[in-house]
View 1: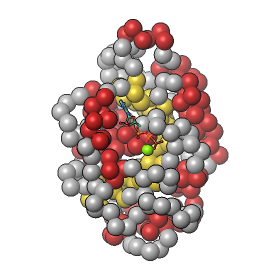
View 2: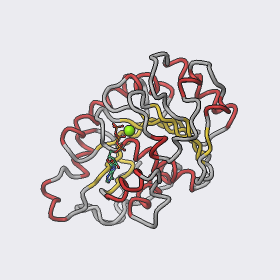
View 3: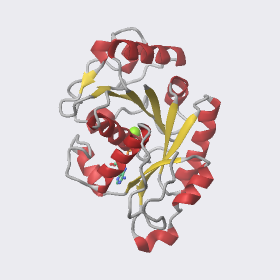
Length: 259
Ligand SMILES: Nc1ncnc2c1ncn2[C@@H]1O[C@H](COP(=O)(O)OP(=O)(O)OP(=O)(O)O)[C@@H](O)[C@H]1O
Ligand SMILES: [Mg+2]
């Protein structure tokens, strides 16, 4: 059982995209996976998963004692093993570290998930402060831009303070164009700057946005490098040793940069 926070101190770096990609990959591998939208500023996963019509209760109804586990959890109609809990449309400011941790305990006890993923708000938002202490692992998402990398560094410091011991870097929206190699911050430099071990790299691919706008994940589309990249991350979370995909400029194929 693993509780995984998906975070970055910067908005728009792909936290929700990574949350859905990793959750659907774990579910496709047969792992019972729960994805929680804990973006308290602007809920989005219901739309990105095409489940906006399913939600009645949200995670804060569970933390606030207004609903039970069975009422807040929704099974995904197309992805076996994937369950979802939405964020409130308007957050009333009533969730606490204690109520969030207790909600995760109840969900584990009653429904027995292998993985719980928690997607958080961008910025140093209270959604991270409330949910991080209940998680054992964090995926820090960063693009290759200097502002995103600085935000990833800051996320690591906040997560240390919250005692989230296992922290991994996910590089999202990686530019695979050879001509841009010298202009972009490289993989090794990102690992060095964030002082965070790498768990995976998701290439930049406009199809991800298109699928998401239709309420679909990369696992609803055909084969793609993004799909392989998410599957590799899911395998690594399950303890498999998977080499980096080919095509990431500057790194030889079969290089292991992971735990
Ligand atoms: N690897 C990628 N390639 C291309 N586009 C991407 C990739 N990852 C994310 N995007 C797009 O970038 C935009 C922001 O992604 P997303 O909503 O996942 O970010 P976020 O960090 O969750 O944002 P917020 O902080 O607002 O919650 C979306 O349009 C998404 O489709
Ligand atoms: Mg988001």
